[in-house]
Length: 181
Image 1 (tube, rainbow, N blue to C red):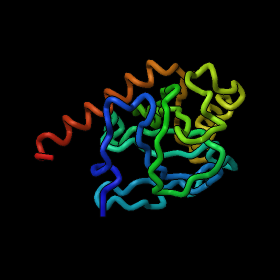
Image 2 (image 1 turned 135 degrees about the vertical axis):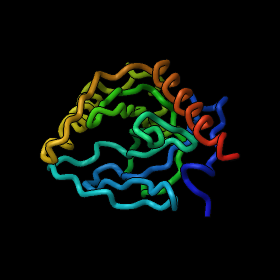
Image 3 (image 1 turned 180 degrees about the horizontal axis):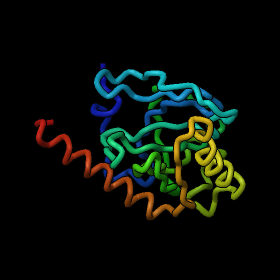
Image 4 (image 1 turned 180 degrees about the vertical axis):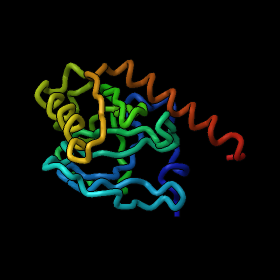
């Protein structure tokens, strides 16, 4: 069985148009699934304490590594909820910098490459402002009842998102190189 974090290739020349993302949480879910790093399976981390639900599909970028010790997160806009462990290709349009309990936890905002309703969205400015506000509000609220501190900054555009992705891919390479992988 292929491991979603380690075995899915990322074409560095295509990250701006067809970045692979493995969905962990479908849009509308209260279940917080997370990749079990050892097995590659999804585990139920928790059910959200608040009355909020994920406003978009949520997943991780394979072969990436971030300051929080996890792969880079992605919030993916599309017409439908996508089942967990689905591999999809996305076009990054922005990034939201977040601190979760003191650790950096960036979220790439992307659109499904193959969803015709979102084909016109190429830059952050193309995303409806209210949708950006909903996503930001979700991340401000989703841990309030757990009494965990989350700080969320405003979204930045596509160029910054591509820089964050490149850094996370490079950090993964540094992490894996000593292991001979």
